[in-house]
Image 1 (cartoon, one colour):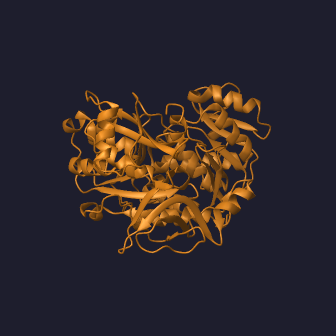
Image 2: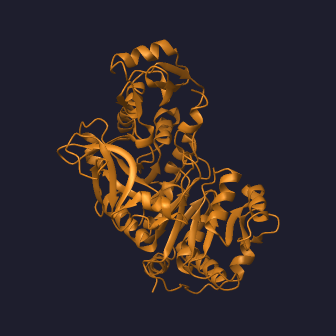
Image 3: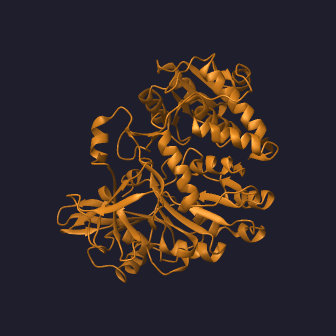
Amino acid sequence: MNRLAELIHRAGRQFAARTAVICDSERLTFAQTEEASNRLASALAGPLGLRKGDRVAVLLPNCPAYVVTDLALIKAGLIRVQINPRFTAAETGFIVEHSGASVLVTSGEYAGIAADVAARTPSLRHVIAAEGGVPGARTWDETLAAGAPQPFAVDTSFDDGYMIGYTSGTTGRPRGAYTTLRSRWATLLQVYANETHCAQGDVMAHAASVAHGSGTKMLPHYAKGAANLLLRRFTPEAFFEAVQAHRVTTSWLVPTMLASLVQSPARSRHDLSSLHTLIYGGAPMPEALMAQALAAFGPILVQIYGLNEAPHPDLTLPKEDHLASRPGVTGRPSVGVRLRVVDAEGREVAPGEIGEIVIAGEHVMAGYWSDPQASAETLREGWCHTGDLARVDADGYVYIVDRKQEMIISGGYNVYPREVEDVLYRHPAVRECAVLGAPDERWGETVVAVVSLKPGAAADAQSIAAHCAQYLAGYKKPRRVCIVEELPKTAAGKIDKKALRTVA
């Protein structure tokens, strides 16, 4: 039995003639997607010689082949090794080798990386080029021709593997969060229960990479007969054009993307009336940006929180809660999730006190791939320790304060960078910012702010520091402000604080 494969087959039958995938001028119906994923699954499990539990690395841009591959791996009982297309060649090579992947599905866009990885990874038996040419690789057409169009599924249990999702590696080597089919089934139901009520006629726009958070919304929409629209490159203009042309109803964004939509003059030139749900997460949402987004798009925002180790939504802030005044709120525990905020001894803290978020539920990872020590550090007594610090109010709303390892201790006082960043975002000239600690002989650490300015805006370090002094205690105020043209981003689109330390 393969329950997720049954769900996919059902969609292929029930919605056969409807559009399942849209990308540029290309469209696939549910029937076409079903046949292609059957062919790929049976080819992988047949002529290519893979067995249940083997790993398949996927390095693709947003494209129809990504959807087909995702569904095929579920049908074949194979574990997807997810590679963010923004990862470097070194990161990609490490992930393919560390996971022991047998197959790499990629495209001509990454031909150089694919050739380098194939040359130095003994476990890699096949490279499949889904789009464009990759020297020495099997073509997409020949791979699908080796399979059969009839419904195909390998028997699986919920304890079998689904995916290995690697971190971006900002604190060292990437770790691979290994999730099972039980986790995928649980997160599917949690999306329905907490984020969006998918239906026929909905169009889910994947503006972010489907190798990141947006990809978790692909199967929930597919199973309900909704279309998945994939943008190869995100720009505000491209997003607005897609919404208008395809009557997009739903999308998932990181806050930096949402900020660019809010600030873009192109917004007023397009009909965005079809949008009913904008989900955002992946990084803290500045209070000022949330207010601007509500003013721009109306009450259609849903905030979520999650991580590779406990896929979102762990916390959800639904549309109606965005209308209440709760500055800095992230959400409340989602349906299907057990969540606590605890002290260093694992005891639940009182309302208003700061502690670490720990999570339990069927969606939580089984552990880190081939890393028992890291698994034991993170998974303790049935709880996943997230490393995120938060407080809970009397009504059960959770306010994430910061990452545990990013907390600054200055003169014996705790400084949470997010609190300082929220104040910086209130400055009318600040577009993006990040706060970090720098070594200081007197105070141990001192607060440093790195900011970029809005186009056409003017401000200097002194005026930004003076702005902060109006709202923050002296030990929290940035002692140094660095103004840069652009803040570096990680492969997941978050501000890269590790890279920023070279600036600060």
